[in-house]
Length: 219
Image 1 (cartoon, rainbow, N blue to C red):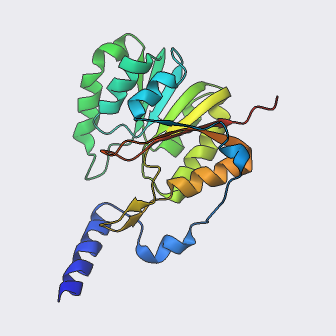
Image 2 (image 1 turned 180 degrees about the horizontal axis):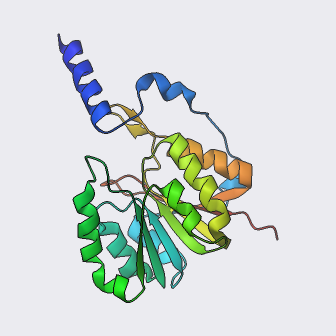
Image 3 (image 1 turned 135 degrees about the vertical axis):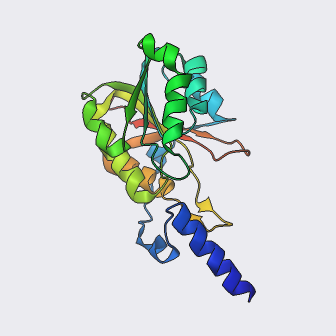
């Protein structure tokens, strides 16, 4: 009886939030990285500290905005010259009304040209940006392997030389659902394939940790 209740809850939660079904967990690769991919890495207390270390006064994109709370922190701590907010705002969890709330929240910054809202899926609006455009980006969207892999590879040519790709939810997944994330797998695979390194990992407990990677210097 208890098993049937758990299965019913699992099926409901998975369908509601469009999560990965357990039978597909094994479809993810299990890539490994070498010492060169971590030798310059550092640990940070939280992602606010990370914002203080990422390039200031640059051109930035946040992929996955939700309510815009972290967007505000980016503006206050990192002070980018331009911040692109990328989100589709069309799911049950993040509906249309959030788009209007975020638009209103950053109305002043939009008028000043400091904030631009690029509404749509991250892998679709990427074509709106020129190559070698971003100083850094922050990924916080679906957390699945396939989506994260697509985001990393599609935004790669959009990064300036020395640009940083950061992101949220650098964890295995949610144990109690269960929901297997694919961020670690996608990041490891990307670093190995394109010769990038992990430069920061955050260690906070209240929310999932973040990562930051950049291309390994050829010098």
